[in-house]
Amino acid sequence: MGVFGKKSLRKETYLVFVHEYKGTMYRIALGYLKTESDAMEAVDETVYIGLSKLHQLREEEKLKPWMTKILIHECHRLIRLRKKDIPTEQLPETEEVTSRVSLTMREAIGELPEDLQEVIILRYFGDLTVKDTAKELNIPQGTVATRTRKALEMLKEKLIFWEGGAEHESV
Image 1 (cartoon, rainbow, N blue to C red):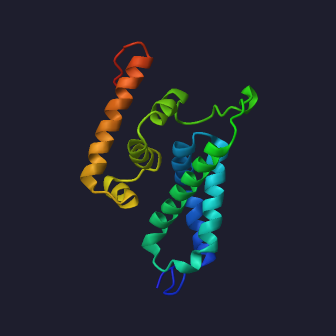
Image 2: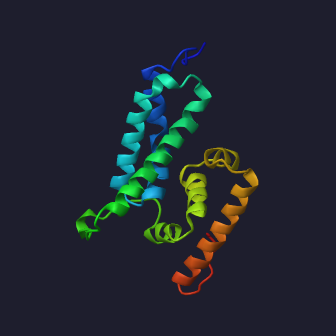
């Protein structure tokens, strides 16, 4: 029968999964929200929501996409809340400088249209396949591939422009 019973998932199993998947959830949230504190808040809230609704999930293979969907909804909720907030200056000592993605790259991704941002975030921050990204966004796999190519081309052009016109092999 495995660690997942026929009824609902066990709390211990859920916690093991969260421990293994939290890094990916954080990268996805950081891609959407751009700040470490917001990303951590989104992941924490996602873990809480997942735990509180764990009794609704019955199949092991649906846990990862289910949690990813909760995370995406939470990121969108935080983005909506942020738009309502009055912007304040961020103090230099509170800036997040320890991200695996450069500030320039995050800014470039942030300037993409939202549909292209989502594909890039899920594919490269969340390490999802084209098939899994298509499932998460409810779009065809061909659309994911097209949006990925378009987004990467736009990022390349933007980074080349920002870097003074030099060609970059890494993009």
